[in-house]
Image 1 (spheres, one colour):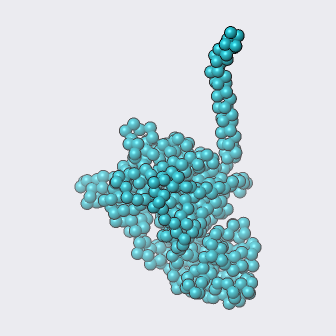
Image 2 (cartoon, helix red, strand yellow; image 1 turned 60 degrees about the vertical axis):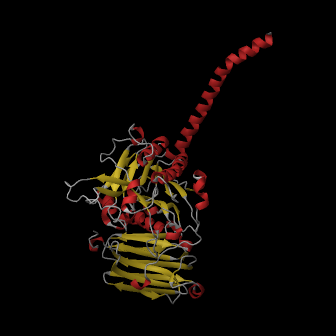
Image 3 (tube, one colour; image 1 turned 120 degrees about the horizontal axis):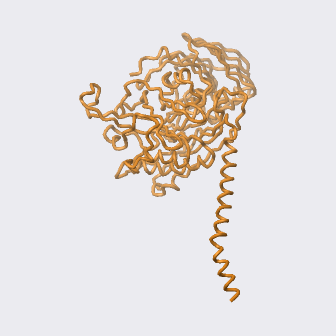
Length: 513
């Protein structure tokens, strides 16, 4: 009888004991969360960011929105992983949710978006369709308490009262959107510099300059091909007091200056601005290269030259103000491979891997160039308003047994059908004579070089790549700019695939459209 009484008494205490235990666990978890957050945010001059280089899911879907929703399944896990690693903002690539189609097919993926920012929270709107892209993105931001930048397609209907209304009665825009960590839509930018997209997207009426505020700085929005032009990015740096740029992109790489991660770093260093860039990953199209860049410090973490399909989440901590030299933010950088097929197993059998990474080259004949024949030498070249100078030292055996090296200068209007621009270039590059193209795998070791440029523009972007198109750490070399004069100088020996100074003479750009 006594045992029964004791067991009964114990049973009565179980809910109480469980409650105590639960509160202890909850308290311990709370402490863990606080400590974890403290690790990444204790310094108010630093913040943690993430970018996702995506392998988009495609296929024959009965309902086009299913394609976007399948990609959003992956986004859900990526955002959660970023948040668990302390990220306060994440950027996704251009065309990450749906591929480009003809105008009518694309319409099925497009959504109407509000024009008033900061007042609409799709995740909390009862009338919002839970299958809408903006609803899903808003909820991802809210549930993970993270700022989120993504690419979308927008439709805006019009009628004959609008003299510019397209014949089908609607405008279709390629847009970048930003949601705050409560799920509110706080920024929308319509891509102005369309690249081969004008048959299915419309040009905005005017160039937009879109920024958004966060507790860790003020950011500008732009998309892919916009990055080659003064507006909007450079204008926002100079006139809008931003501390960072966010770039969703689907970038097709080009040697020797416009390989994605190389060019992204050159923007960050050339303008001394933070840059969060997310690219699509498609080696068959020569599309890869994403990263987090902190002003003149360059890349804190990046992806590059992937030989196979590789969706990667990159995370790092950086200074809120890239000009803040007093505070050193420890990057604590991470790269996390995302198993897309784990989240969407039904597409696993249709996945294709690529063994060859394709990087289309800029025609070497555009350069006034000289072959390096001596192990120690100085060379000067001029072309129109561009003058280039190099002083170098290279091991004589490497010079004879490795790839051929050329030093070149160019000053031209790029004759692209899809958009023309003015560029001034001084470049040192390795050349594979057997394949008649730029080398990209193993460069020769230079003991030292100093590459200088005198351009007609102050907008100058530096680059230095080594074996397999990796970026040479910025503490191995110096970039200095004074007006239209600039130079790159190495601090130690380095294997060189290419290095150069890329000047953008915006004032000579032909009208875009």
